[in-house]
Image (cartoon, rainbow, N blue to C red):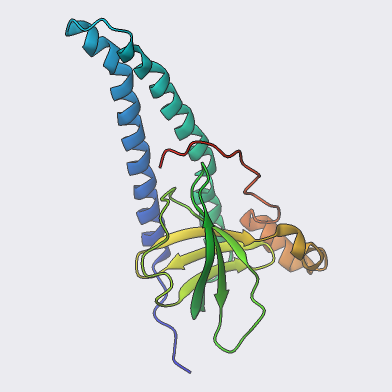
Length: 209
C-alpha cells in the first residue's frame, strides 16, 4: 500500500482560507459602496433621472446578502476548532455526487473513502471561505479529513489548501450512531462544535456569486 502524502500545514491552510474570506468581503463592500455612490455621482454630473436612485436599494441588497453569507462564514471558526480537536487522516478517494447552488455557498455532496473500505457516508460539504467553485484537483487525488463521520468535520484538498466543512447527509440517518457513541467520542464532537447540525435549512432565491 502506498504511503500517504505529507499532511498539510494546518496554520497555512487556515491562513489561506481567511485570506480568501477577507478578499470576498472586501470585494462585496467595494461593490456596495459603488452602488450607494451612483445616485450622488449622477446628481453631480447633472443626470437627475430616477434610474440612478436604484443604486441605493441594490447596495443594501449586496450588504444584506454579504451579512447572511458572513454569518455562514462562522463555519471557518468551527473548522479551526475541529482541526484543534481531531488529527488529520488521509482519504485516498474523493467522489463528488452533486452540487446545489444556495445563498451561503455551493453545497456539494461528497464521499471520502479509503481504498479497500466500503460504506462511507454521503457528506454535505461547504467551502469554509465562501468560495463557490468546487476545489480544483479535488477528485484527482485524495484529501485529508479531520473529524468524526457521524458528526462531521473538515476536508482539506492538499493541491489547493481548499478547506470544506462537512456533515452527514442526511443528518438524521446517523442519529442512532451518534446516540450510541461513547462518552469520549461525544465529548470530542462537543469540543469541536459538531455535535449538532450546523448548516440549517436555507431559503432559495437570487444568488449573487
